[in-house]
Length: 333
Ligand code: XMP
Image (cartoon, rainbow, N blue to C red; front, side, top):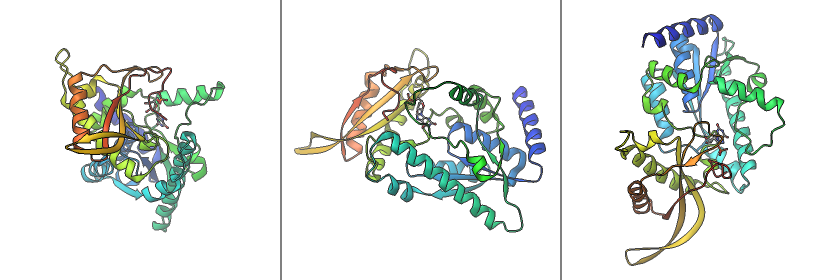
């Protein structure tokens, strides 16, 4: 609409004024905030923006290709895709404690991003390289980090964040979404031409599938989980609630699959199976501080479990998580 159109024009002018003829790098995760920030900044300064997309091997099915297709293919933005899955999975081998896993993933992410930033600088000899780091910080993040400093909060989960990165890289910060709430970021994304299903995607944690594979992370587990989760998400979109006309992806705030590295016995045809278990998690919440498990229709649960067990060889049991937050958390780690 025209109001959003005006907003975009203003924001674009502001970014151009702030950046001038300098260069910007941005860590693209595929999440809503970094995607909208990238689209907006690209609209303003085109090829003066380079996006760095770190593929840590803990992304969802086809996620990396989808991000590249959108930003490189459709928007024609400069995107460097860093294949770092061997590095991440290698460093995670043998580590099962959740906080330790989170810290390793966060540290590697910063290392990889820094290495990529200096490579870009070296490749453009003559130019001084990027002088700005862009981040998709939104207004609630601004409040939250202020609050966390003043309160002495118990750390339940150390969040994967790139705090301190601009200082370490010696870069100035560019945060064009700092004044916006999540709903406004989404509207802006749609107005910038990003697909609705990208802009309205459920939140996905920075450490990705790393915290949805309980205990030690292995490539085999990640591959099974990706396929099971894709089935769950596909069926949430397929099932429409007749009362509201909305599908169950829209009716839930967050839904995903968790990989449990335990085996249970099953029967398939006339053979015995001894395979892994997954748990489905779907919650409804307004602020993610408390959450209820979603009362998904039985027909949906039945379809999902049937498809996962039949289509994903290696998983023979599907469970549904009926825990509220608190006392459980939304993610299992
Ligand atoms: P919990 O599991 O604490 O999650 O109830 C609350 C919300 O936060 C998300 N989450 C994360 N988001 N980095 C993120 O960006 C993280 O490390 C992280 N850990 C949890 C979680 O998916 C849920 O939406």
